[in-house]
Length: 130
Image (cartoon, rainbow, N blue to C red; front, side, top):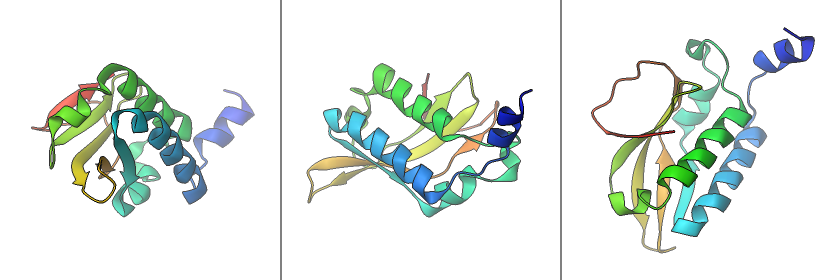
């Protein structure tokens, strides 16, 4: 393992990092009328030690990019108040979310409730796997 890899592994994501990820996700999902939002719990949980290996901004960008490619047009069809989980099989990252209709902006808000790195994440909600 290179020194740079060790430094990156132990680096926590800052609010600025998460803002950049959110801007990226907003930009790609705007094409299907979705605005991505992170809750405070998501922000707290992204740097949680229980993730074992820290979650990186590159991994978050990856899951949003691949989810858009594979499921982007399906997500708005889930409808208001729908709940589902974005799941990346390669990185074991799971992002449970709720879809909320924003009357003012006439778009859906994909509210990312939390994030966790866990291979056997259990949920009764629909899973959008990439």
